Length: 270
Image (cartoon, rainbow, N blue to C red):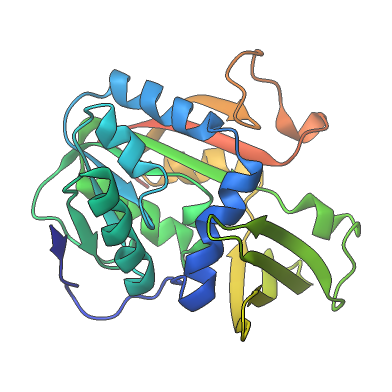
C-alpha cells in the first residue's frame, strides 16, 4: 500500500531520475549488508511497529519485512517509491510506504523504533529539528537507530575541491553500466559539503542526469550533544558498521568515517 503525501512538499532532498535508479546498484556494489544486520539486531531489542525513515526503494526495508519485522517506510522521492513498487511486486511483498518529508510528516501513531540508516539525517535541512520531530514519533523508551558519516576524503584533501572525479560505477542486471562523476566544495564554517553529480547509464542512446546535494557533517561529540538535547539517551555506537570491538573515541582513531548510533527516547529535551 503506497500512501499519498501529507502536509505539502518537504524540505529534504529526494533522489530523482537516474539518481534514484542507480542508487541501490551503487550501494550493493560496495555494501556487504553489515548495516542490515545491525538494523535487525536493533529491532529485536525494540519489538513492535517500526518505521524506516528514507526507505528508498526498499533496499533495507524489504529484507527486514522478509524477516517478519513489523516495519513501514517513509520516503520523499516519488521515483524511489515507484522503483520500490516494482521491487515489492517481484518479491511478493505488500509494504506500507508513506510519502512525505522526514522533518514534517506525521503518522497519527507512535512507533516502537525509528530507523534512519544510510546517512539520511544528514540530508535534512535542519538535523536538530528532524530529531525533535522524530522524538515525537516514538513511544516513550522507543529506540532510535541512525548512521552518519564524516567526509574525511573531502576534508583532508584526498579529493580536491571543484574538480570532477569518478565516484561510483556498477553493472546492472540487464548488462548496462551505471557511473557517477562528482565534484564538491566545502563550507567548513557551516559544516556543509556541497556536491554536484553527473549520472550516466549506458545504452543506445545513453541516459544522463545531473543533480546537486548538500550534506551536513556532524562530529561525534556534536552528535552526542545533539541526541541529548533532543531527548535521546545514547546507548551504543559502532564504527564502520562493526559491532565487535569496544567502542573507542572515533576522534582519536583512524576509521572510514561511518558512525552508527543506537539511542532511546526519554521525556527530557532541552
